[in-house]
View 1 (tube, one colour):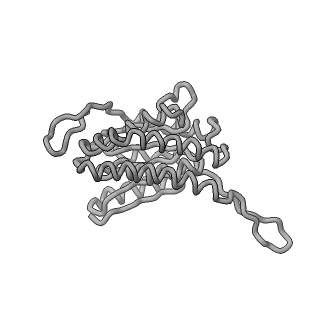
View 2 (cartoon, helix red, strand yellow):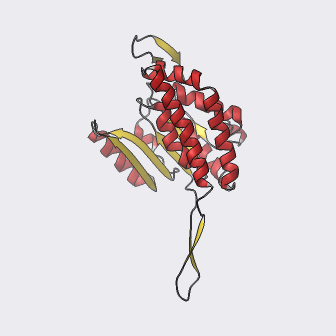
View 3 (cartoon, one colour):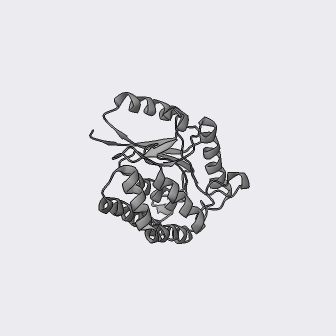
Length: 242
């Protein structure tokens, strides 16, 4: 499938079209990674080192990613570069925040030993729109990864290129061997899924799903919510006003 320059209609690049079986494979890989890779049990400061390394790589490649984002989403270059920096800053913010969150808090209950604990959910799914591709990816995956979860990303089919580039950097920096589920080494999976009904994405193997949507499509949002209520333990929907 081709992604096109929204200004000229010219093809920028082609990418693979995946199906429901690929959705299953991605979710299973993310669940396997959560349970067996050790990512979820790393101390927050060690996870932070890996996330900061990814942020450093994004910042180093900021001129390239900014140009990709400008072409793919039809943005002016200055705004696209700002979106890349926002993603970098968000990764760093949550990596640092996670180091200061108390995982266990004692409760004062007379005659009892009581406490609350914070634990990662598991495989988290994210569906992102076309208008702020990389920026919103940062908003979604940064807190999830910092908390010890794994992630499955579904960018918009109109603007997939920055997500693909992010996956490449994640592999190169060693944060997670993306797309290597067959080797059992995945700690997070980033895959592009197209021509798949959104219900197929909300699989019961996911512990959490978050979708960035628009109030301009109420029937679709209702369908998504109904499917999520059946399959997903926690579901978030961030709506715009359009």
